[in-house]
Amino acid sequence: MKKSLLALFFGVYCSFVFGQKKKLDSLWFVYNNQTVDINKRLSAINDIAWSYKNNNPDTAIILAENQLQLARTLPIEKGAGSIGQAYTTMGASYLNKSNYPKAL
Image 1 (cartoon, rainbow, N blue to C red):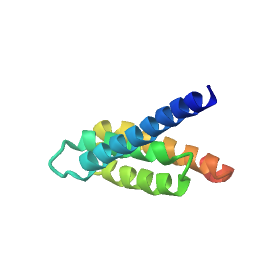
Image 2 (spheres, one colour):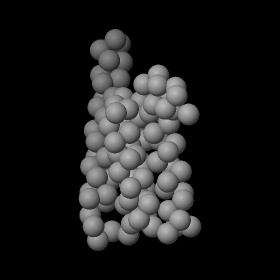
Image 3 (cartoon, one colour):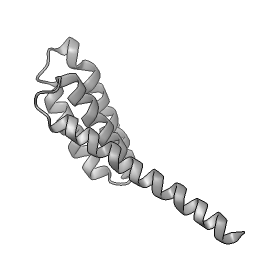
Image 4 (cartoon, rainbow, N blue to C red):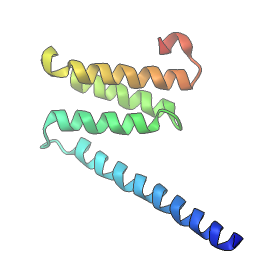
């Protein structure tokens, strides 16, 4: 019984871990592809940065800063949502680092 339960847990864990890697690889492909629409690229980098906010907040902050720079190349009415998302990711990442002044 214990072996089958352990095997089930291991199988679910591996599928979750490898599934996430595949998703991140796809998002990186979209973000790095210059021919893709800029809004899709911004969405991809936002998803990537958000996925790093808990485990690697320094990386999330750097990615959010890249998103912010890219979003600022758009007219304000088109880039405002991505700018807000970038600041939200940075704030959550700084919060996870216990840097409360920067999180605000």
